[in-house]
Structure formats: structure tokens, C-alpha cells
Length: 194
Image (cartoon, rainbow, N blue to C red):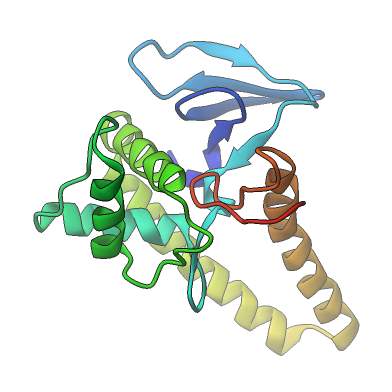
């Protein structure tokens, strides 16, 4: 299982794993004990976890790095608040997890979503595998970028950068349409209209 195969579906709780692709959507399976499968269509708003990031005061931190940090800090004693905890508990948790998170753009509801997703991944996924896959993805991405920069002609490099931007932008733009334009990470939110 890799983060690129795990999605959040707008209007549905929990997380889902992509098990198949169709011409007009996906076949998803819930990441819970029921393992229920269902199809999506072209109108279904899906956020891929590997494309999500949390706003920090200096930019953004990819979700995959956040869960890796959280996994390590939880082993070190950090307690993940349960969904019925007070809002102040979630804020305290986030300060311990990511001290430089952007308090203006990351809301308590985003932190709750982050903790919920992490709990699902921890309980129904293989965190060691997800973290290992994340490290391999970063290594492969860096190697690809180095190859592109040294071997590509300027025209190809421009296209490559455009492709990278395009690949990241749909997460921001597609997700900001839902929830009143307040979603980048599907946990942390972006304020302002789409």
C-alpha cells in the first residue's frame, strides 16, 4: 500500500484505497474492517493523500512527511487525541507535532481530520510500509529531477516543470472548490475563495 493509492472522498468519512481504475472513475475499498468496495464517477471529488500538504509559516509540508514525523513522535510518547477531545487538545497536539504550522490557514477541523486519517492508516494500513514507500518515492523523485536537469534540453525542462506544477495544482484547485474554498490538505485548509 502506498499513499498515492489512498484517497479521501468528499462527503464521505474515512479513507479509501484505490483497487481499480475504470474509464469513468475508480473502484475504491474502505480502509476499515468492512473492506466495502464501491465505484466513483467523474463528478466524485477525490483527494489523493500523496498530493496533500499542511501549510507552515515557511510554505508547505507534504502529508507523507507529516505522518512519518507523527509516527516517530507517537513512538516517543506523543499522544494522538481521540475525536471527542477538546479543541485545545488538538491545538496542543499540533504544536508538538509541527510547531511551525500556519495557525491562520490550518484550522482545528483540519487537525481533527489529520488525526483521524493517521489513526485509520495506523490501524488498517502498514505504517512501516507507508513510511518506507515514502522514502523510496523521495529518492526516486530526487533522482528523476537530477536526471531531468542534467539531460533535458531547455524546452523539455520547461515542459517538465509545467507538468510538475500541473500535477500539484489540481490538488489545490480541485479541493478548494469544496468546503467553501477552504481545502488544500483535506486536513489543513486554505482560506479565501477558490
